[in-house]
Length: 419
Image (cartoon, rainbow, N blue to C red):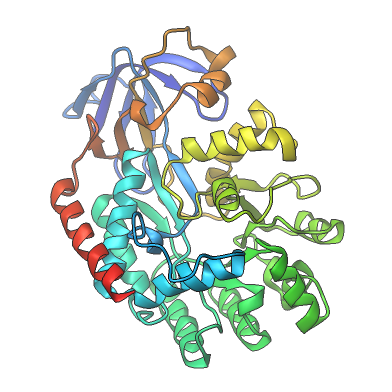
């Protein structure tokens, strides 16, 4: 157990401030006890939190660990002129080059970054078409070595041929037999009817859901109309993908009113990835008509959810209906997705300790102003995951960060040369 002494606890749901001692139990379903008696706290490791703020840690609602070794790589052989060319010349070139070592260290790099940025749970969407088998288990090992809880899926697609699509389906079903996860699909325009049908069946058999990119670019809608005679969300609804409360629809930029009504009327969740949309010049997220089940992700751009929240807020001034409370609600909504679907690993004993050097008062009444204009990842001094300290005074405790980064750089060089 851990005893956080003399800190200010911020209830992530009510934003109530309380000066208190916090006892933190271990385990994936561990609890916290506020102001415990001495007998209960006996033998606990003590951390002095005087002058610091304690609150629930964060969740990445949509990540791509497979992109972790891309930072700084050479430009593609052709300068992409649209979204499809960005995929073709960058990301589909990269994912084909990944092997098992690269997959593992992509997971290490991602988990390391998530931990230091205060996220103790990651919902990841993975692709490595020439290293499909065991890829999810390798990512699982990497995340758990650092101490990050996870909800993984493999990005099943027909773009690399029937055999690789089949491997994705089989790998997914094998993984779900022993681990909680989702059934990943790339997007409508790379998934045929047979593969889509089999993916939905796997989700149904395993009490899971679909995790898929939806109308990230207008090309996705154009393809669906030309090949299937219906729009993307209509196609997924007809296939049964929207029946699962665990289903996650990423992006959802180019939906008409009918599609938004289908999403809102189903139990599925939408994940917004603002910075990725800006980077790819595909459009702007607008929540109107989608309902309240909207959460935030990073789409592999980085692992800093505080940064993602700020981006959603600032861009939303011009393209969305979003204010201070709504930004924070989306930021925290991934916790509600996990709890409503009974996923373990995001209990109350997942915490961040903030050493926040504010020149102005911070209290319940102005918390959201500090959240959007003050809090940064540099303020995170400690991170507790499932009751275990994984970051202490800004340093990882579970792995040797220097050695891990050295190996990540080796794998990045291998990847770039292979590409």
